[in-house]
Length: 431
Ligand code: HEC
Ligand code: HEC
Image 1 (tube, rainbow, N blue to C red):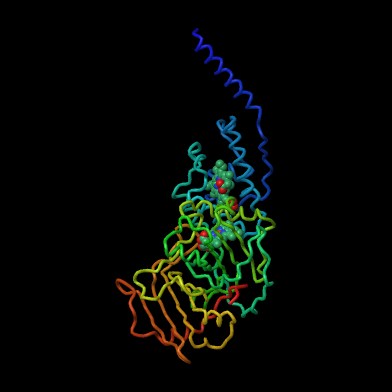
Image 2: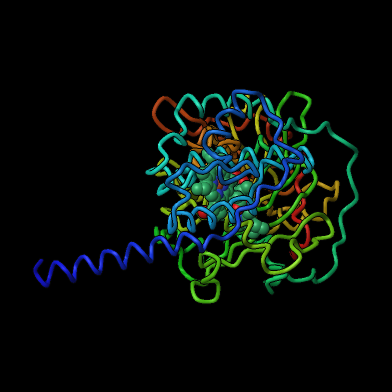
């Protein structure tokens, strides 16, 4: 035997010996009893069992090649972390709405390509979710859609603490969010809410300059959610305030949470969400798969070229949101500051002179980034109401065969309807 071969052989046996030794360093992977397993139709459960249960349940099954160190270490880490985030073996303990939300989140993680993890799939092709699997899961989730609530009496104007407490990660409540501009909205049938997405001045400028992947430091996005209330005609509108959420971009300060500072205030009391700063892990968990859009779901609606001059949809303040009975359109009622200040007092008096209202209506379609949401697509119609003394000047535009066309006049019944709509409350927003 040559000297080199002897050395090589020596090395190989050393590596082999270390490999065998390492096998004894095995962190424990417990299998606690299944206490409250997910309840779902058998076909849905079979899919999740095959593709997800090995990391997201107490019933982890490891093929032989996962039992070998160092692969085993990675598996134990994934399973421990996976169970901590989502455990189908005890999910039954959660209120039904939270269980449903976990299933919507699950199918969306699959659709976004985040789950099962790609490296895992490469070695465990059996965990792949097929197009048919998706149809099966979506079919079931569609039956869990939350219908708009029947209208209740008007609730009193909320009086939250002033100022509301900061979020547990120190982010202060942005009392000026009511003046932020709308960049989009969504109807969420997975939880029966309707949302407006607003941007601060830095965010709006970034949108205009098309600098949103990534967003610049200083950009602030707010998402305001209201419970959906059923209208007599079968449509629905924004009713009681539910919560306001924030994302503030600061790459350095929030390096640990995707470069965004997350915060949420719940209910009319504007109670900050979360026990401690780790609450943001939840936000990150859902937003992280959006790698191509800097963790942001919303695609801002753009000023479409066909809109008449001066009618920029990224201006104005949100006064209300609605969807039509067939759920084919999504509308936002916007106002200038005169109209907004009036609307936010919720007085029954007519709008003061100088008020401008814009009802923007889009055709709505399923959100490509979130199964459970419907978002605005092409502009379907625009109504502009300008208060002139005691009357309204009403300009109306509707989609023609090719583009948006100005109608000869606004329909008086529609003028009356738009100007008497109940508006939604942005709790805690200073005029
Ligand atoms: C190899 C283990 C593994 C498999 C298999 C797996 N996951 Fe995960 N999952 C994880 C880990 C680890 C995390 C937490 C870190 C992350 O988000 O990457 C996670 C996070 C999640 C989250 C986010 C939970 C939260 O609130 O933070 C969801 C939802 C999810 N997985 C759903 C699924 C679904 C659905 C499947 C099956 C189609 C699946 N996972 C398969 C390991 C796994
Ligand atoms: C279950 C998934 C999920 C979790 C958890 C989640 N979000 Fe979101 N978030 C969404 C979706 C989906 C949208 C898109 C708007 C819509 O349809 O509601 C969104 C949008 C937003 C927006 C508007 C900007 C954008 O990305 O479109 C903000 C701000 C926001 N979320 C803040 C938060 C905060 C703060 C938390 C944690 C307290 C959080 N989110 C947790 C799913 C989630």
